[in-house]
Image (cartoon, rainbow, N blue to C red):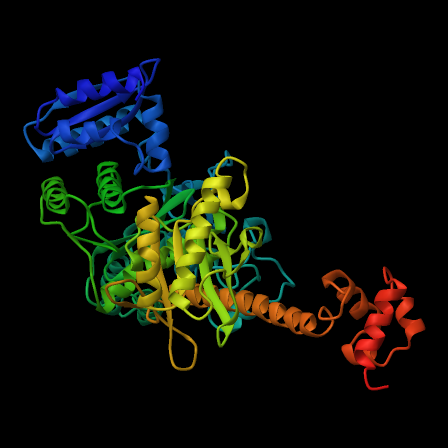
Length: 611
């Protein structure tokens, strides 16, 4: 330990065992990390001890810490609130900083006459009216589409200058009752069209429930005045709005008002996805991309606190896709801020669980998009990490399979998957040296040799010079039990599991030394494990078959005096089959590259002993 770390550790050991906030600073005095602790001494000391179990991001942060300060707090709640406030104020480099994955969006209303309504990404200096800003393009676009359909506004790109022209024929939307065709002269008056536009704006400003209530009141007043034509138009408009509203309310039947939060992680980045439900319908979605995380429960807690301290509306219920640290404290803080109860839950089954899974799949898909990967690979890694209790999705997975024929020519194949896809630069083959008819002992030999190769190559850039995040063995508890002591003895912390097949030789489950973990219910994880198991089986059995073919060749040709492996290959390349070699004349054998007359005679005599 260098002098800097020694001094920091000594300072950390003098901290009190009370709640508080600690502030890490670099050489220039700039704040680079802010954290909270239930017991300051214990938490801060962890940074300056052994860094073997720290994530890469934490190691980088600790390497830059020159000094730290702390603030004592009277309770954990106070520490939590102070941490959030300081993070928003200083925006430290190594904290999770919420950056929305999209900018603001607006609803543009063009100038009279014949106003049009459209969703846009920015405000232009064109004199038009703009509603917003809104966080979500999804919710803005859907609301604008619903308003246009409910009030029969044009869904094309025509503007005011293109309206009310003679000789223009109405499009299909007019004929199916979804547009009033203001572009065609005489189809609708300017006054009636303006009334429709105003109704759409009321719909967008007030929401469907308030707009329907106002139109219902207006319809009743029109009926009282015996203006039945107007009452009928309003009745049809209300029916359209209710139909559009019903189409949106198809996601959550159990909880009318809630936010659903899910996390998807990759080694480089992580993504939080938020689904906002109001009146039982999905009304908004938001995404936040952050740096890779070390502790998912703590990251969810930090995210929730920052999200709702940043001005987002606090719902009565927040459903999360996994464990949340300090969940009781968070619930109390949000309840106090909201003025009414706010619950944070992790649903395990039913509709709510399905919603959190849907939210997580969306986060994984977006993360795959920005990392230029396939969505199913990112989702599979994320699901697999959850199933196996890993803090982060594995970047490198190594899989091993043993192949032999009744103990003959026993070999092993090693395949590597990087970020969920085959990484063929890392593939390796092993010839079993000591155990020819014992799969468990053979697997232990292979893993021991692989770890020895790591020690040899850790400095030279070869793939063997890095350790995997996860090892999967094609086999059950026996293989895992044989290999686990090898890894522990070497002092490495590598997740280890076996891949179990059913009686039809298809992937069924994952196992450790304790029991089996069912994976068929988690489709993305199952597909990933199945692909890995099939690939390592293909690779191992292919190597075994080549070894057997080589041995069969050796048992015939290399048994001849003067014929080694090289000459045997040259003979096979020249004649194609052993049968062709056996019937060849001496002169033909002499023509083979590298062949001498004495060896050619030995080959000829070997196959013509009875002549």
